[in-house]
Image (cartoon, rainbow, N blue to C red; front, side, top):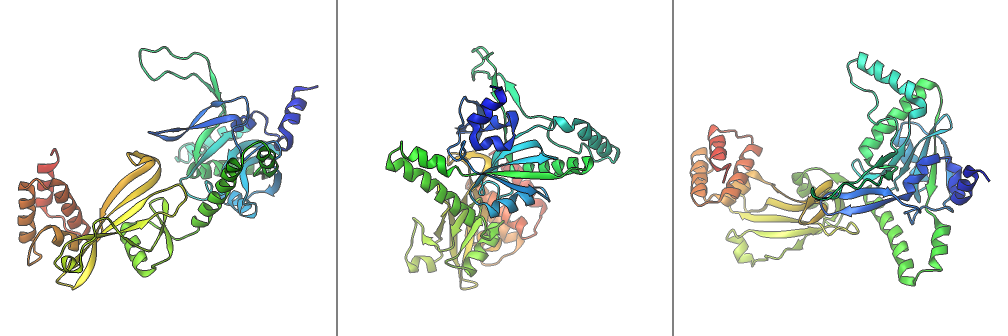
Length: 408
């Protein structure tokens, strides 16, 4: 029996992809680094995806237009898709492992194995044309991404591990994937051949087979995982808010609704935070916080909004916010992929809350800032400077104060 026949027999439905060595991306283990988030490990002997297996249904979606837009359109018609293969003139160019959730955002991460070697001459011609037009290389990725790498141990006194480990794919953001698929379109146009695609669907039959071997709690885990991804997909269609000022405005105008901010989804119904106060204390000017909580499965993010009663306007004004930001590559004590962010919401109200003053003129503000500097309130002083600049003020004194506390 030929080797290819053996491979096809073992691959089951996946043999319909005609993916060749690119199929090994399914054998690539993924780990979690506390510092860097998701990371790629070397290829294993068996597939490492519960969602994809030999009995996964393969859907031929035919010609794909407009790069990543075409792939997303195909996913909307097949929401259980877990991966896709892209072809130029019927010859495979890439195999991507993205589900409908990881494919939806602009900076989410999946895995991609690709080989553009069959079109190397075309790629070189596109590069030459781009260079002649002074726009740099046309294509960002190299011709092939199937590498055999050696891994060094983490400490300098340990010897390098010389046993090579094959790594078929790479972590790829949807932004880079979009650029890559644009390159695919350009190659196809140059050679006069269509771009087509096939989707790899969730392996329902494989899940049913495994369910006979696993306990009910393990079965529930797989079902809940699918439910979680469907929830995330639905949430990805909600309004996305880019600035904290817009979030506050949207939350006040749409109580009880949902919106995306900082990489997660919030229910726009505030709750009392940990430092509640009596109405009398609030009317005397004591700041208080309300909290918005993330409703994205697996994310415990919060957004705390600091309010203070302003006697001049007779209003409760949001002055500052603190929230958990989720982004690829970010890392902090909150965990991989997260960071803590703070920002002034209402610059004037924040300055008045930090500097006790009757008027709101430059001399009074600077005098209050000098008092803050003497008291060692450097963090708040930096926030006051940031608030003034948000108001459009750029006094020479601000830079001088910044320089005086820069090393403190």
